[in-house]
Image 1 (tube, rainbow, N blue to C red):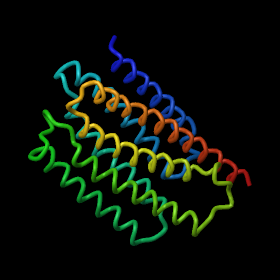
Image 2 (cartoon, one colour; image 1 turned 90 degrees about the horizontal axis):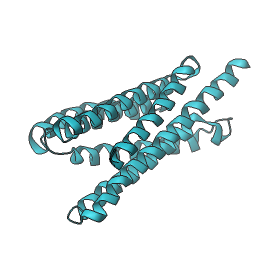
Image 3 (cartoon, rainbow, N blue to C red; image 1 turned 60 degrees about the horizontal axis):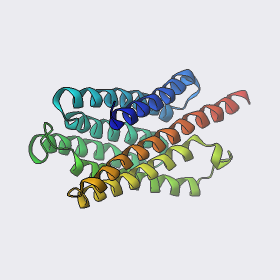
Length: 220
């Protein structure tokens, strides 16, 4: 069994744990974290399909094109429900429409989904998510919650996104720089899994924190 398969199955296991946690406390979650639970389940399915795709057609590029778009839609919808301002909400919906159209064009013309990874769209979606994250941190500062920040699901989700979007953006850049150096490129590739592992852990904490926060509110 290759190291790639081992880390892939490890990632699947982590997604399964987080998804199971979300399902177990689904009724106690706010709408944003119910969407996050669904997004985690979708991520688990695409991660499994990626493994199968590598074995069958020797590339997971088609799956990654679908994954890039689906992740952006779900994570953006979560932000849609977390923001208060109507202008930002409308901007998020508009961005989903634009990214969806560009993703289809990219998959058919610029980076064919049968052979190339959707790095162009990844750069667009990651930059957009980073902006959403910064705007939400600003909203949290302007409208602070009575709940301690480390016990807020919103804080952990937003931390997960800012970490994911910035580090993965860097990983894609390093991959382009070192693509001709097989040894370094392999390390950069596995950095991708390190990022996914940490991101999954943070989203799991976000789901648990939101569940506890809502449980306390309902108890009062």
